[in-house]
Amino acid sequence: MLIAGFPAGAWGTNCYLVAPAAGEECVIIDPGHEAAEGVEEALKKHRLKPVAVVLTHGHLDHVASVVPVCGAHDVPAWIHPEDRYMMSDPEKALGRSIGTQLMGELTVGEPADVKALTDGARLALAGLEFSVAHAPGHTRGSVTFRMPETPEIPSVFFSGDLLFAGSIGRTDLPGGSMDDMLASLARVCLPLDDSTVVLSGHGPQTTIGQERAANPYLRELAAGPGANADAAPRRGM
Image 1: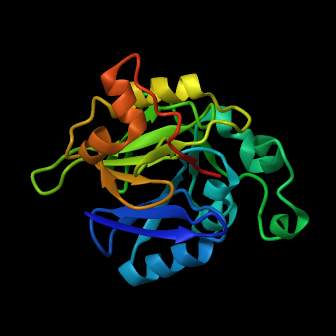
Image 2: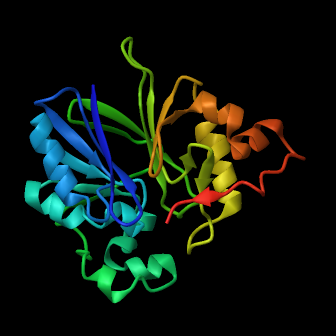
């Protein structure tokens, strides 16, 4: 399997291209702010043909390049219905202005074909399978994507802004909820095998085992009532 990832834009949001191998069809995950050029470079380098864009949530640092990327390759975008409005109204999603200069660098709106992600769905795209888990907390429509383990590679978990190396997503923007975040971490992340590779929306690669041992939020959940992770930073836009 081929996974080509790069950080893009003002927030260093990780965009991923996933394919069975070079020269094959691929899925693009979270083409955010200023990601279109990097997507085209990765497509050319690895000789890939996109068949879909899938989105972990609707914040503009994850969706700002959806319209140009989908338009250039005539592919659909998949997003949870509760976050769909953010593509057309990014400032409402943030509860504040993002500034006219930055807005001038964005293509606000929806691509021609938008499809709905649902909890428990299994997407068969580009010869690959992605299991979808609804994971609210950072936004109401946040989701994760997990690829199954094979004899050659461990399971791969695209966590969006749910789980980071050493931290979790922020919950102070519209639609965020710390209670929902902790419930999603417990339901979606804790049951995963320690060997599961975590590719998040920001920052470096990690594993569930590393986060179970060192991430204060997962440690608190695993330890049960009485633990305290309040001092740990939270990330995301």
